[in-house]
Amino acid sequence: MGEFDFIDWIRSQQAAGGLVVTAAGDDLAVLKWPTDELLLVGVDQVLDGVHFDSQVHSPREIGRKVMNRNLSDCAAMACLPAAAVATVALPAGIGVQYAKELYLGLREAADPFGCVIVGGDTASWAGKLAVTVSILGRSGGIEPVRRSGATAGEGIYVTGALGGSILGRHMNFSPRVELARRLAPLGISAMIDISDGLSRDLRHICEASGVGAIILAEKVPIHGDARTLANRDGKPALEHALHDGEDHELLFCSRAQGLRQLGAIRIGETVAERGVWIQGERNEKGEKGVKEELRPLGWEHSL
Ligand SMILES: [Mg+2]
Image 1 (cartoon, helix red, strand yellow):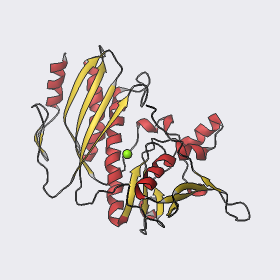
Image 2: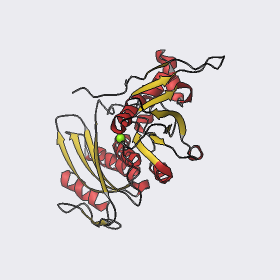
Image 3: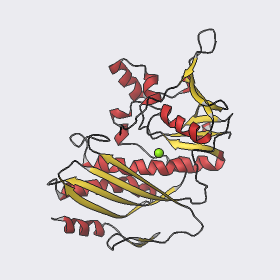
Image 4: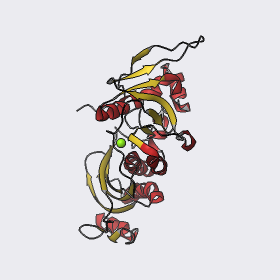
């Protein structure tokens, strides 16, 4: 089976319907876009040796991860994933079955959200595997939630426990699209999905919004994976929760009530003074812990 047979196989997996007027197979796909909706566009790539290890992770897992990263960005804006296009640079000789598995991984992630893969491109080369997905989201009656809307005196929330995702969750997480759609109408001023680590992503919100933030150490939900990792490397589990990244939980600011019932966990508040701090745990006498700068130690690609 060659490239063209593979393309035929992909075409056979797709159908027009919904937003899709012409599915993959022509030079471009054709979508019918609701005229009263905003179009949100993003792109995300994963590289062998950086975001996954092809010696360890299956093509299904790799496909799922790159699609889920894009879907998580949709969650971060509270939009609905509508369609996606994918490009794959395959190591020469890896075989069509591998490419099919990658595609099926993309589909496994996208299908539950009604997100249709409407096009793509594959090529093989002497390099390692690289997969890129571009996503099209629609506002679906909810104003997109940006990073820039937070003001002083709001609660800072996360939607789940953090840290230690490298033990496996970074390859297999659930984008919080539905939760974001339920939270946003209650009044979310700024939101992001935690990809680079709480300490770094919170800074992104603070910088975009022109506010500061104080996180309460005792309120940060620590994932069991963070504790496992802490036992192995001797670093405090809290450090993993604050900095590890690839949790893909939502981090947001809000003045609304009733967020806890939806599963949101309040971890601190925004302040007028610029900067990001962490307040240590109270001692036995109930006295406040030390407040120190929360430095951004999360993931950053060096260029
Ligand atoms: Mg993001």
